[in-house]
Image (cartoon, rainbow, N blue to C red; front, side, top):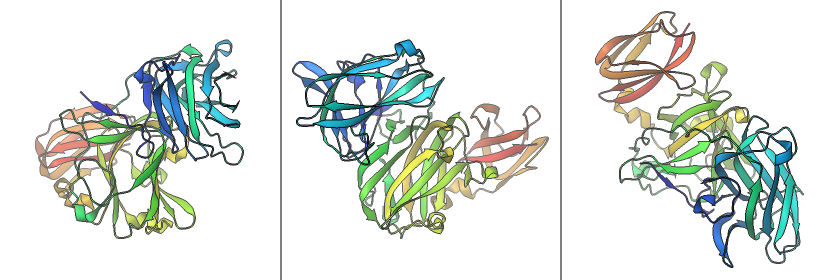
Length: 436
């Protein structure tokens, strides 16, 4: 059984919980929200009534969010008014806020309405979301809306009895890996850890805040713990920052493991390093389709290790003496694209970890590639199993060659790009095949 860890301290991570359905009265622990933007969130007892408390931070756009087990349907204009009760902090005066539904289907990707509060007593807010909307998987409440050129008001806001809309679709279970990413083998003295929970690396990013939306899920079915970030890129990206910046110029490679399942638009994502040398700047490494000029081809639904020379980022202008933040975003940073991304073992290393992976040194080749017939596979190590996937992650072929040399019959496949995951006595590897 998989284990899900939810932390509600904004100083550590930003996670998204899973609610039951509207209305939310916060009598159920599953109604908990997850903070972002430096805020905090918890369910508390307010004079015998359980309510949601969001502790507003100093960010212009901070708040808390929740993912629904059943979507909220706002498509009926006569049934998409949302009501809730809110109690602002003591002495709050007038403050601006934002109520936003995200990850929409059957309509706009987001539906959002601004609202204001005056005073510090309980008050009922009514929001009309208008026509032409769809169903929504996520709700985000921004205690600070940032609409007036900066809104960094702080304090504890209480919420109760969030209701409205109709019950929508109950989504299918999210795709997920069958197991955890491999445990890194990079030595402690040669590693700077951005995210890893298995190796206790000494040198690590001092995470002070998170932004965007992510869950942390333990994919190890045993009593051991091996967590990974889980991101629904249909809703949002995710990133973290620290107080530094840190000097990481002594490390030669940026590495991580990912597992990706596409669900909207073009398959892929962008990994971004961010510096602060007086100006905050972003430098991305896009994984998608090298035929479209991306840095690497995305591998569907298989744990894949990426190793990027630090020079890739510094050649773009990244200042490796001033690491400030990292983040992951949708392919082309466009809301038209999305998918489920699991990310683990984000490390900076002195040496290329793939160069010490025994299976990576195995010599093999696929020919002809591209092909309009078969692919001949020849290698120096015994291959036990082969699984071929299309670009949507659907398995289209499976073989058990148990040989160094074998043939993949492509006659049943349509023209396009495929990925073959091979499992051998020395490990696994995935490579790209093209059918003409």
